[in-house]
Amino acid sequence: MTTGAIQDAFVLLLVERGYEKVSMRDIAGVAGVGLGTLYLYFPGKDSIAAVTVRSWMRKQAAILAQAAEAPAPRTIEQTIRAMVAAHVHDLLGHADEWRALLFVERRISSPESYREIYREFVGLFRDALAASSDLPAALDPRRTAFNAFAIIDAIVEQALLVQDVCPGTEELVRDVECAVAGYIRAAQEGAVISGRTAQNQQARAVVSS
Image (cartoon, rainbow, N blue to C red; front, side, top):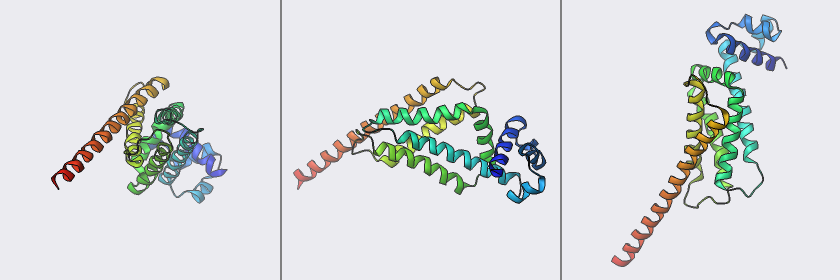
């Protein structure tokens, strides 16, 4: 309970003041714990930030996992719509908090930590795509999931971090869906062309032999 209160206090202060202006004493005061108690849990502000960012990322992963477990069978299009809607709605539903946390993440996350959580998100998309009823055999679920999530992550994060006015939730959902659907279609077409090329090469090899 105390750890949760400390993280909640950190996020509240982060949004209100920015990272540089938040002190350990401030966090202790808002969390309702003594400064000495705070240091028993965390050695410093960077530690609180790292744990809080990871906690929020884990919660987001749980939301996506729930979206991925919708009743089957489900097409690729239905899968993408469910995953995109879940991701965008939660991030924009807490836009101020996520904006502040994403800026902090770039400051305190190690490359190893960033890769670990990113792989977890990609794994959720991979499993959801692999369970789709119409995934072409020629499409690699892992590669497709990595690229699809990279598109989603880039559009949503930059909407939060760069744009002066963040788009409305449904507008952003549509934009992301269009981008991912376009990639999926192109990947499917590319897989079909590659398959035909391979077949033609095999046929020419048989004829020449």
